[in-house]
Length: 110
Length: 112
Image (cartoon, rainbow over all chains, first blue to last red; front, side, top):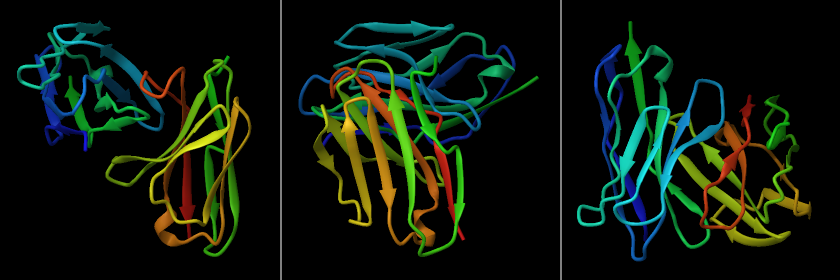
């Protein structure tokens, strides 16, 4: 079946560092891809999405490009802030649900 | 206005009790879900409803029974609670089953 693999965390960075969180997927069709963010004690919020190959999703300085050839959707940000500390989930759309990766915790220190 | 709201936010109860979690969405979506998040943050789908009809039931014990009185509501009733049911339960909704989902704030269930 379809699946999503994310890099293990935690990812620990200093403020203003460059962020990459890797995400690869396995799918039989052409899914949409998503990044969600979960701040402590809160629900998941959609961060960005891409619906077809070569699409780039972006929001709040975060970007991810749908790469069909490498089945990847890596999340990047040029300069992280302490307020970006959260758990990030990569997900894909199956025919009738979203399938999530295991989540990657990001910790940003001043 | 909260798009997807679930109550209660916290629920502490003893083993063997029966409890319910309520969920409502005001987005006009046709599809609603229940997800379970374990202590390691892993998210697993439990149920999916489309227009009040059950679409997905992912090998969840039959102690868990979802109820959808209308397409804006999807409640979760749990009978005979066990220690292993302790988790955060998220309600979500989407326009279609393969589009982005909007999540509630979660219900942290602790069974003691």
